[in-house]
Image 1 (cartoon, one colour):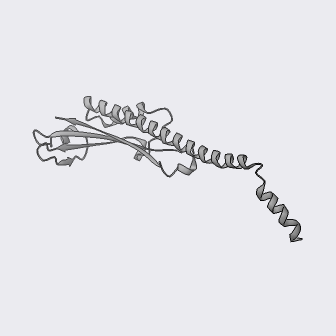
Image 2 (spheres, helix red, strand yellow):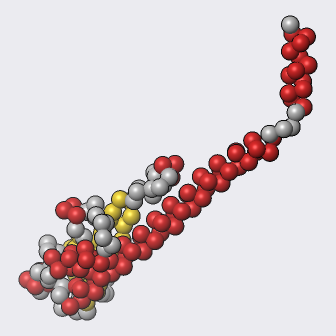
Image 3 (cartoon, one colour):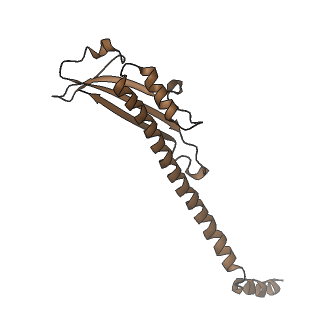
Length: 160
């Protein structure tokens, strides 16, 4: 019985029919995976830029109304594309205020963004208002899902 199988296995080993199709299947699957990865990376970068623009809108609002935290958060939310949900606590941008000592570079965090807290900053120091937002990224390809788990952006406005 082994004498009849051995020539057939030898013939099968020498047969090159379908080798190109097999090579194409292997290479095409690798290229498709890399293409989805490149798409995911580009899509994540684009969403990161849009998130940064939304946070920058909140910073621009803070220039005119630094004590209106709800307004700053609304400015960020309205600049986000429809359907985007922030993963920050409460689903809104985080707004923090602090004093900057210009000579030493030391930053003192304030309890809130109120005029009374701003008045505690030393004369000649700058006031910093930082706006931060984060959101989860949903990957197209599950292979790369762990590579881009979270998108975040922050913007700091400084007052003299």
